Length: 113
Length: 113
Image (cartoon, rainbow over all chains, first blue to last red; front, side):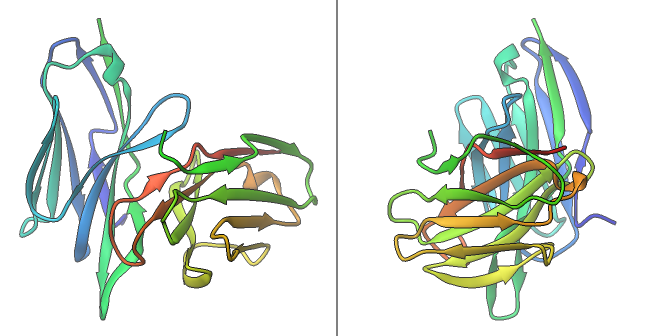
């Protein structure tokens, strides 16, 4: 079983819809990251969370540490939001946090005009 | 633009050959991470360097090696290439060794024929 699971794998939405992408993890973490990968391949960091909620423009990320679950919400979706969204965690190890990320498989979002 | 540069952008080579991928981190970042993204495995951690020293190894094959130089740029060497090594190779940098946001380079697309 993967340590980081995302759902759904694929998501098609109409422009303007509210979108939610979910991420569950099975290990202790020091931080969770949401990344965006456009069709060209480049990866952009959207959020880094260790608790609570963060908002940036139309994007909102939340995390529930007790339930080991995070969600990424996109309000008023737009075709330019079409991309792969990847959840990644930094595992908490004895003596501190490891540096590298462990990734989910990604959610491919397509927003139709 | 994340400030992380990778060269070359594309690389096409034959089985059995050796290639070197190069990464320059953001100014001031001491950590460099190498990740491999293949269609079947997704994003996987290969190796982490901090200020010239190897900090952690992930799923890195013995045919692969890396180093970080005094000017903090890093090189990933892939030898005895196989068809299955075809993938996108990303480096990411961060200020810290065990935490903080990671900034991804544009990636090197390696095709082994």
